[in-house]
Image (cartoon, rainbow, N blue to C red):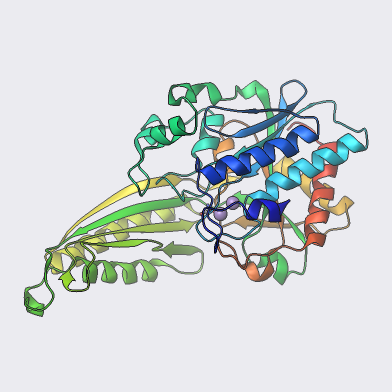
Length: 392
Ligand code: HGY
Ligand code: MN
Ligand code: MN
């Protein structure tokens, strides 16, 4: 199932499946079919989330995402959706459907790979979708609202996606760890204690475009050289417990013989303490202004995304740990450096996350790998969690 989904890509050589793209449509159709085959009542909401329901509210929500990063691995997101379907199907076949309601969800915008936003479709489900998101543009200049319309959805109906608090008893997500901890501890499964908060910045550096052959070095206002110094400054911000990443950079006009007059780059900064993160962002903003002043550049730093460190519900953690022990695992508890839709859902109901060992901790990379044995054990633990679930 994972390999079938991984074959649905915009590009033949690498896995790229952007939110609301034709590939997203095909993956959503496949997931809808699989959900329907288990007997779930399947529908799509106004944001293109695939929803599979059984029974009355309040429902236990089991979800992950089916859109991918650029050049993705086969497991990030899709593993959680496939595992949820297989876990539910196991219960149906054992004639052991739970007495409480269940809703499986495949989210569409966890990775921010198309629009400069993230967790937007789970935010809508949790009732805190930000209307300004609809005006955000992708790299082709298409707005989120236009993409929804092209996908056959009505942006005016976004508010209808929201669940009422009484409709959700809890949220659980199964996900590849995307880090090296479980492998280092030689354990297949882990219980997530919290998802680490993050701030994402767009930094725009303005200098003066000029002729690469005629402008003396001391007279240049080179936006790219300035951005490069700011990138090194970002790297220096990082330390044990705080990560800082410049993941994208764009130099304009972008020609071999023109001194770049405009550069845009992004920063993703994460650390467990929200206060320390805010301090680090303020210090970085000041550092960029210092570098710009020294080089006679202009710099604009904009926060494009910010989310606090989000703890997982302690009682649900214990229920997950008991389920892991019941299938023979030793429940390692660990934080998630990666963000997940559970950070959105925590505003609606208690959340929990089950991690699966990740080979060499490699993710957001086609080399990403989880073994069938570990995934099978994770699904068995998820089945046990559902069987013994108690609404916190
Ligand atoms: O970036 C993240 O933390 C998530 O994997 N999208
Ligand atoms: Mn993910
Ligand atoms: Mn990811």
